[in-house]
Length: 84
Image 1: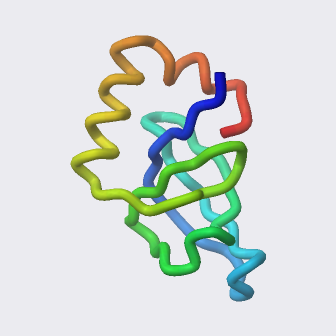
Image 2 (image 1 turned 30 degrees about the vertical axis):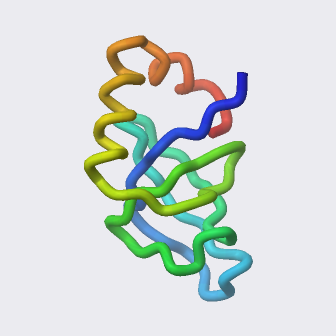
């Protein structure tokens, strides 16, 4: 099953909107993902990530609710080895 996971942007590299990459924290997991689909995203924002691309921004409350659910169901641990 494909799943989009919320994460917080820790840092952003690149100036070209189509080439920007962000270091994203998903609970205790940190991955690099493309920010091409969310050019307005900034450090500290929460984004929804699917197959290596941040596809939308979301508010912190919703992100925390989804991360808590994923932790409680052990889904977040299963994602550790996958590309988000």
